[in-house]
Image (tube, rainbow over all chains, first blue to last red; front, side, top):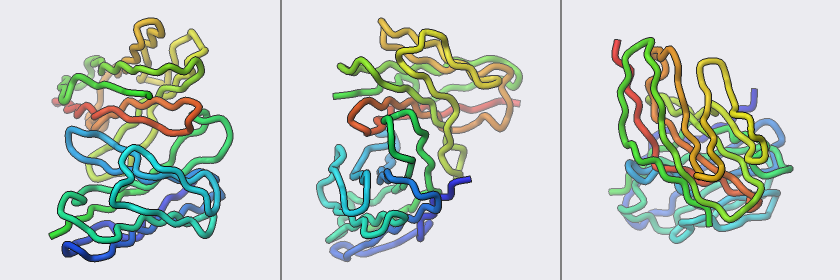
Length: 115
Length: 113
């Protein structure tokens, strides 16, 4: 089975800190995604990457950046964390090819609290 | 732009009964996919069922089936013989040529013993 591992399950950071959320997948998937999950808002796409060093903005990219230097790793970066970025962050991956034909595999999530 | 709407924030069902979760979507694309994902409490999101828009036949996976009404842009999930392990947050999602999976706001399903 594909495994998507998010390095931190729970994080607590201070306003203004730089935060790195790491995600690693072990099945050579081309596509990787970062979502943010908030009650009543569902999952909202922050950024996605369809290949190494390639990235595209999702629906809510403001305040975030991403890095994909290696195929298996996709990092989400909060340059200067703010309290409104307190949320659950979900990483997901899938093989390339026909969009939607392949299923997303999700990580367990990283719950970030910004004080 | 794609949108997905789940109008039921919470639902409840008795064990062994049947429940239907509603989902409507909007897309201008002719070729797209629809999904139902399940997120159990404190556990990872997993796929429940998938439907390809060009297929008229409704998808079925064991106790889970969908009612796909393309003209009405409706994609509901039916869970038959509900079990305690079905309690979870359920998300409807769509994906078209943009390669982005767009999710609804979720329906929290409680299963009463």
